[in-house]
Image 1 (tube, rainbow, N blue to C red):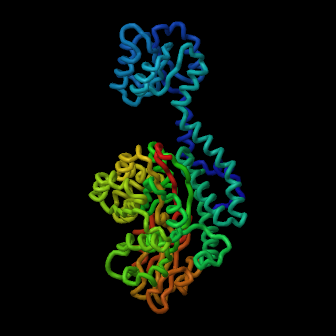
Image 2 (image 1 turned 30 degrees about the vertical axis):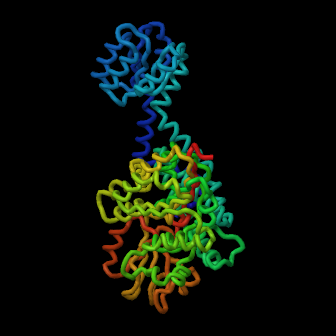
Image 3 (image 1 turned 90 degrees about the vertical axis):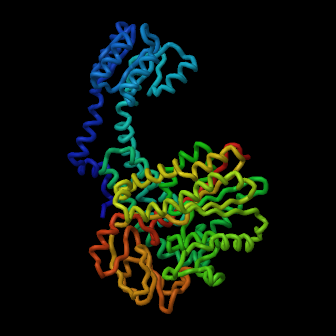
Length: 550
């Protein structure tokens, strides 16, 4: 395990691989880039040309657009500096022709004309930057650096900033954090994980991953110590959990005259929310960005039913014995959510709320939501359960192509973002974004990428889930799991006599001795849920409003 007393800066220097060194060298060598400067008064810009050449750039000049386009067709160019006003063909015409030849070639427009129409036309033609004459050499240099060396500069800044925050996070982990501090720690780790996507340093990512692993180790100990207290109302202070979400985070925002949409996206981790946040921000104001704790098991059958019912699984089983189904029972395990939801509203004396409940399980359901979304505006509370990310997680385990598309955390987030951007859910929300609505976005649980197998033995009635199991005569290594010999201590129903529950810690997954090696290889590096980890348990609840809402 990584030694947190090691200076991450030194660690980074010591561990630089040949590939990493080459990567940084390539980015650094962008200062040798080829610049094409097109201006009918280029002779008056010789001092600026010499200045750029002194900085390592190769500068080729032309006085007209025709020659510039021909040069771009025949030669490699990194950036074009383009005068807007030239005889022959204008800068804008030249820009159009250059883009037709090299669509992604960065072009900086330089002009004396500050009219809005010209700027709009230039921006619409995909210029990269816009400079107003007279320009000084440092202005041009700054623009080139932003274009050519942005990745390097951002990466360096990111690495330096994380190195400065490294010890703060380490100290926070050592300072006996409570649940609020754990929420903050996890948010900060997610923040740096997203920032590291801008970095070209696998060594710093490795340091961050080590710190995240250390955090999950400490978090498991924390949950093992406090979870039963929370569930049994024995703690002086406890977080909002799945069965309290509706009461404390959704219903307080429901008002007469304003339609509130409670959107529950199955298996949406906090980092995945951050990936889709910018898309929501285009149409909605984000008012609150909070987290809550999923109950155990962090699995749909338990956590989502608890959200809808406002009850722990044990209480659901007691009050709705015909609707609750154990893991090994036949039939769907989440078929009674609307019934549970209406019962909760009645128990909280909120049964007068005009309610709709929509579950989207496939694309056809999604299209129906798009077509019907305006009809929902007459309700005070619209609950929409959207089951895509969870299906993505499960499908990735089974399909090789998805394993390639979502090979790691970064690509998994990217795939989630791409899905949402083109999803019926996004289409439906855009259709009503101009209406005075409120949105509460949440999930039922997260997931964790598993890498560490643990052996578990049990009888034939033992459940197959990789992150939790329940059954009789379970045989396991105690330090590898959180165990409840009496399920009632964890607010869970008792499936059978002498049944107990165990939950995998950190990135562990539970495998049977039979055909052990096959299952270890098959499930390694897959996203699973049901156990104890920051990613599974600390999950988002976000309050938003349309930009027209009061």
